[in-house]
Amino acid sequence: MPLKNTVGRVCCSYLVRCSLVTVLIMTKTSLASIFLRSLTVQLSFNFRTMQGLGFMFSMLPVQAALKGDRLRMEAFSKRHLQMFGTNPYLVPAVVGSVASIEECVEGNQKAADLKAAVMGPYAAIGDSFFGMALRLFSSTLAALVAYSSGNILAPAAFMLVFTPAQLWVRIIGFIKGYSLGMDSFQYIRALNLTALSSRLHYVSLFIVVLLTLFLLDVGGHYQELSAMHRLFAALVFLLSFLCALRGVSAEKIIYGVGLLCMVLSF
Image 1 (spheres, rainbow, N blue to C red):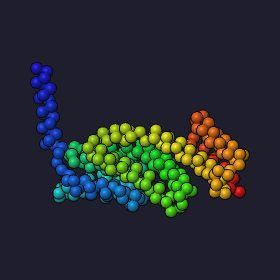
Image 2: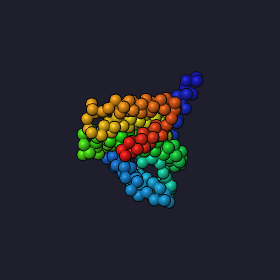
Image 3: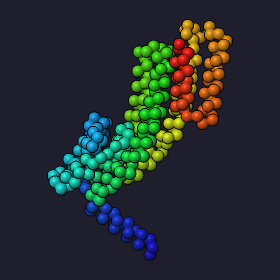
Image 4: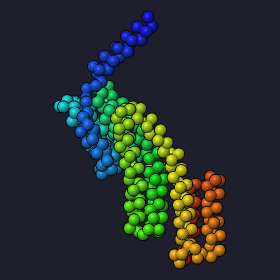
């Protein structure tokens, strides 16, 4: 008897959901258009709605799928022209989730609630990882390439590290967002970008220390460095490592080593 009741409730729930929810079916072409539009969200940044206008531009294919339902189209526009601001590299994850939710009649308010709930945390996570960790790592790696191979290859080194990483997060974020809907935050949480940011900070630190070892050789021949110079370089590396172990932030160590390099350049 309990099994029959359970099956009955599931069937009733399924029928209600089919009759109320699945009213829009987005094609692959529409989804591709939504994703490509989400890449331009910063182009219409303004102080009133921040990324709101760009977000609405990304959602236009969803609105077009309403097929003349004027009342829903007006409500749709009002809902997505509201203020919205988060890290641009995580915007596709939000856009994918909202597109999935907006396919459902009952999901209209859920879409607005999701945007309000995730834009703050995504901004903090994305700014910390992309702006302060990945960009710093790419820059220090480019500086190392510039010293060892010439300035022409440095921008390419930066782009080959930073661009694929952010593009991968955008593409997979959109796919996961569309497939998971309201649960898309699980994908961002699984990435653990906060822990990855900490690791990249310390990798960047050791690259800067390695650059210090190179830059101490003013003549261009590392093997001709004096014993004093080599001892000083080893002390810089050891001191940086000890500071990292004692919990000193990677930013402070990097700025300190950079200041030391400026002093030594005189």
